[in-house]
Amino acid sequence: MLQTKFLHLPNAEIAYRVVEIPDSKSDKCCVMLHGAGVAGELTYKPIVEFSSLWRWVLIPDLNGMGQSYHEGQLEGPLDIETLANDMDALITHLGWRNFDLVGYSLGGLVALQLNAIRKARGEESHKLALMEPAGLDRACVETLATFRQRYKLASNTIRETGDVELGIAHFMDGVAPNRRKHPVAEATTQSRLAHRPIGFSYALDAVTHFVEEMSEDETIRPALLSAAPEVLLLSGGLSHELLHEHYDVLAQEREGWQHIQITGCDHSLPFQKPRQVARQLEKWFFV
Image (tube, rainbow, N blue to C red; front, side, top):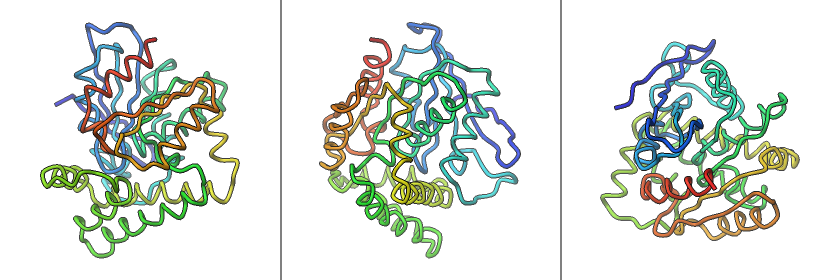
């Protein structure tokens, strides 16, 4: 277990860990942001164990997940901008200025928003690696907004019926329809996501609401992408073809962007292939 510290913000208590890698290849820093429903340590500890890239790695829990809560240890609605501002406050608290950014799923979208916030403040853009970031899984934003309605079914099922298992199943059928439904793997995924089911449901809603905003304002997503000149997109080889197609287009159209598929895995790639993820991160950040 990594040592967990807490930053008390006006409306939230943010848990985080700072990992030191003594035999690292550089003195660089990295911030790693996890996905909906699964805490930072569980997501990234295996990847960090295969890494010798950075001297310091910050692994926080986004509000509503892991050990991070609204003030008073409460569950409540979330939004992407607030999650990004929480991370900005944490990084400022630590005094970090230059760092790489890694984000997975929800954390990928938060990473893009965090990068845009800091750039708007006059700071340099960060180099990013995003594993199937929320909000980029389809080229057409209107199609994406329609697709995201499935996640409302998942979140509503969890909060309104209390059937956490069914709600998680609805989520997995949406995010990883081509996954190999091995009973052990399905049970492991259920266990990971059921730790904070209400927080998980609000995290899904945060992405859904953000995508709805993108569909209403066509400038939102291009602004996020333009603020990030260097981005590695990592996807699972079993993920949806439309996701792969959009990532390929982004890599072709944007200088400094790359897309790499990791074979044999789906949306759960950081859990399924941590060694391969660590290898791709090393190639990307230390070329």
